[in-house]
Length: 437
Ligand SMILES: Cc1cc2nc3c(=O)[nH]c(=O)nc-3n(C[C@H](O)[C@H](O)[C@H](O)COP(=O)(O)OP(=O)(O)OC[C@H]3O[C@@H](n4cnc5c(N)ncnc54)[C@H](O)[C@@H]3O)c2cc1C
Image (cartoon, rainbow, N blue to C red):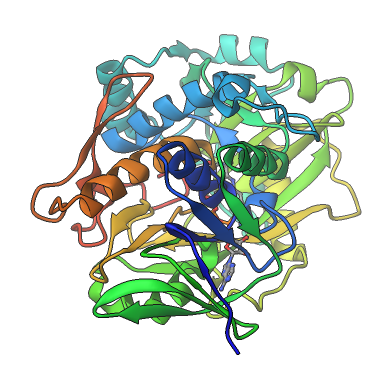
């Protein structure tokens, strides 16, 4: 016999974005329930996020969202309004420097920084080596793999400049940040169910009516939001909306590696976020005086798309470990390359143009916050804030497809036209088509 429970909103997923949506929607007066098949909040792809906060996106919306998101992290404790019994996550504002690919900066990023008012400095090579002692400033473009002999050649010239932004950093513990949001949502009346798998989307009279669970029970709600991360396409297929969306999502496997800082350089204390377009990596300080290094998906690297997000190789591969750590060693020559491979493997939920989908769907009452493309941890609050207002407007009868909802963002006052994140937008040609957004 099936048991029936009643909520205003069911949020499928309790990652950083699902938990943040619960908080924003609870504050707006909705009775929310997050359902997650894992044992706790933030145990999905959020757990392995690098949790980097930076603003150098390639589109106005990308820069504006990230700038707004930075302000939320700066006032994290005040935003939550609670103290988690496990403590609140910390934001380390170490600053960030971005090197290589000057044309992307000149043509796209810096004009957007100027327009939006984001502080930055150009650093010459002397400034860069002064701020990051031991950094090698050779130019290697285009990125290569160590199997390629050209990888080992001396760089033909030096990089000419770098761009530094003080408003960059990282969150020390992405899973804890998600737990903080769970507690903040619960304080506003939100509820969470774990170890509970959604197996179907219930539809009555052409509108969403709730979800079916794998244990045979069901839960009623007239609003259901797909925030299932790399499982987003699975949930869209369950709801029967996948084919009616112009922009699709797919799961892409990614490795992030952890290495000790070079001898004599306390990278945790004196390092910073480095976006190294020239070598196709990014790296940041990690607790324990380590460095965490990820990939910008340069063209020479194979992309591993995953058909079934429940089944993928969780082991670090020799070949990607070598590619990423040796690229880092070219930039920081004193780095010792450890024999033991350490790091994490997880999935991005990638949209066709690497820009998220925060939207309604053709099934009334069914919404999506998906396609976060490896770069939306930093934006969870502003994404949840904007989607809450979109849902409120649509539920009040507004035709968002014909007249897109516009949201004034609370810290910067910038106005976000939510059609940028539409499921039916044209592919955004300004995107980097990579994790850079
Ligand atoms: C390796 C890596 C590095 C990254 N680095 C950064 C970074 O530095 N900065 C940045 O801004 N972003 C980064 N990202 C991206 C960022 O982490 C994601 O955009 C964000 O965490 C997505 O959160 P989410 O809540 O949408 O998804 P998730 O955290 O994946 O949560 C989705 C949840 O849905 C649940 N679920 C799925 N299907 C079902 C079902 N049928 N029933 C019940 N529950 C279900 C899952 O169990 C999961 O807990 C990175 C991502 C990865 C993988």
